[in-house]
Image 1 (cartoon, helix red, strand yellow):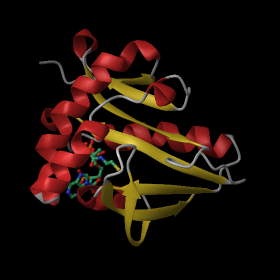
Image 2 (cartoon, protein in one colour):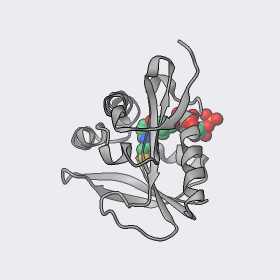
Image 3 (cartoon, helix red, strand yellow):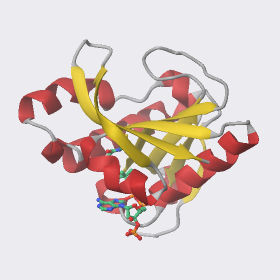
Image 4 (cartoon, protein in one colour):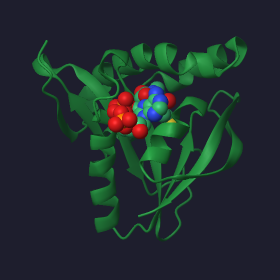
Length: 168
Ligand SMILES: CC(C)(COP(=O)(O)OP(=O)(O)OC[C@H]1O[C@@H](n2cnc3c(N)ncnc32)[C@H](O)[C@@H]1OP(=O)(O)O)[C@@H](O)C(=O)NCCC(=O)NCCS
């Protein structure tokens, strides 16, 4: 298996590749941080690619040989859930890396693309609703933990996470 990975902006054609990646990543890397009932309730929502992100121009995929998607992540001006926009504030969105490809700086590489784009767009602070397991990753990227939150998902399920902020 070649180790070469390239990062590019996602398109709507990445729907299946990103969904396959999320379905591999969440059970392997997120499940253990939640009780079984909570994970089973949030998993169907979080393991499907979001079309609005794929066409946003600010969502990225990491592609390995033969076009296999092994990472995804991006940012938006819109706050997830409410769509609210505040000047100078951006939101980190739906990051995941395939469990066979973790700790190779793929997540960090996708975040670097987000950071450059967000800064160039006038964003001064990035907010992230991290999974419980994702806190150390975002802390390594310079985010501060602001406390536990419960994000209400599209299906009404409450998803425990951590609100994190980074001045960029
Ligand atoms: C969080 C996630 C995207 C990180 O992707 P990754 O490509 O493995 O991360 P990177 O290799 O870029 O890691 C960068 C740094 O973050 C920290 N980090 C990343 N994963 C970590 C882990 N599991 N434990 C501790 N620190 C971690 C480390 O400091 C790491 O640098 P190092 O490897 O030199 O020590 C990946 O673990 C994942 O897909 N998790 C499941 C989905 C998820 O929770 N996403 C967050 C949604 S809010």
